[in-house]
View 1 (tube, rainbow, N blue to C red):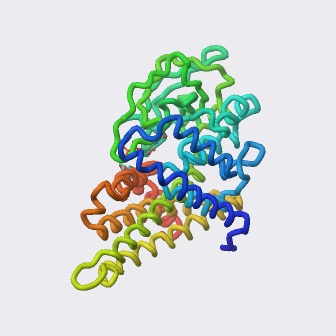
View 2 (view 1 turned 45 degrees about the horizontal axis):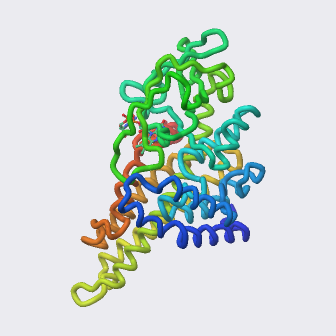
View 3 (view 1 turned 180 degrees about the vertical axis):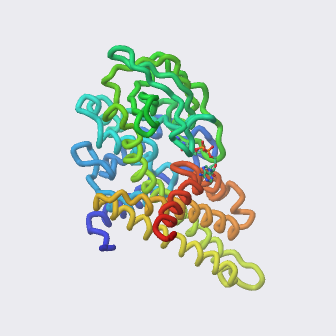
Length: 393
Ligand SMILES: Cc1cc2nc3c(=O)[nH]c(=O)nc-3n(C[C@H](O)[C@H](O)[C@H](O)COP(=O)(O)OP(=O)(O)OC[C@H]3O[C@@H](n4cnc5c(N)ncnc54)[C@H](O)[C@@H]3O)c2cc1C
């Protein structure tokens, strides 16, 4: 495996880093006073600047207006964008739209691509992916899916209850996972549907309040009451919902890891800066071994995480499923990012807890990373299954 970063990727990474420093990080101050995030006008202006700077959608092919970078090539670029929680939204490479664009690019037919993918890639609309349901429905175990899609002539009638559909408030459409054939196991009998948000029968009940900064479009609880969709709303093929979702989730896990590495790297930089300036017991904090070890452990966590991301992206690029590696990478990076943020707060003392630094907000936001896209325990279960299969007698 070649670890060198091609010249053009280094150049884009440098320019993204500069854009984040000059255009994005100054806007973080606005978030301190406005918990609803950037205004639509601010976001539009920021996105226009990203387009003008030639940094729009690094992950998309050029014919869709992107930079045409591969999964491996976006690793340092997404990390640079992820140095601010607003960075990925500015470049149109944030969750859930980035994963949804990837899914649509792989499986949308021409009409669906025209209607959903192109405006999403242009940043004209947003989207949401509605799979998770409150108990007793699908969560860690997607085979517990309760939302149903029943065929009625050329239409499907969908009923169900979802929550944590990120970005749904203000989205133009939902990608809905539903059981379309209850007579076969759920993983063979579920289907993905594309539903314009204004379709009668979609009821956004609330934006579930969560810890951490508010994300664009929130994390919505939604009910479907006799939602009628035409047969042409099916993404891919009927009964293929699970397979398609796996194709979306594999790379989407990696891109979450890339973006969060950017925040963790910035946290290490902030902690090191504080420790080099703050004095206690006769020296700068960096002179104390306990602080040095925390800095070293965070540097090790970041380095190991980057190597795992790169290797998993490389395997996926070879056409391998890399299930084991992507689970290992997701668990490690999600937990490493939380460790790095925790140490950074500890090193910065009271200032780390204060809102004068961004660390406490990131700490709150990063906690969810150990739960979404598969909780750490579920990934460990998957990893252990393979270990037992390989090494038990
Ligand atoms: C911020 C955020 C954004 C999200 N965005 C989306 C989205 O856009 N679309 C969407 O569909 N979903 C989304 N989700 C939902 C997310 O995918 C689920 O939360 C996740 O799959 C876990 O499901 P659950 O919350 O129902 O947990 P549960 O299934 O109720 O599990 C609870 C806990 O039990 C433990 N557990 C579960 N299984 C096992 C096991 N086998 N062994 C040991 N322990 C286990 C884990 O610790 C887990 O955290 C989001 C969640 C969050 C927090």
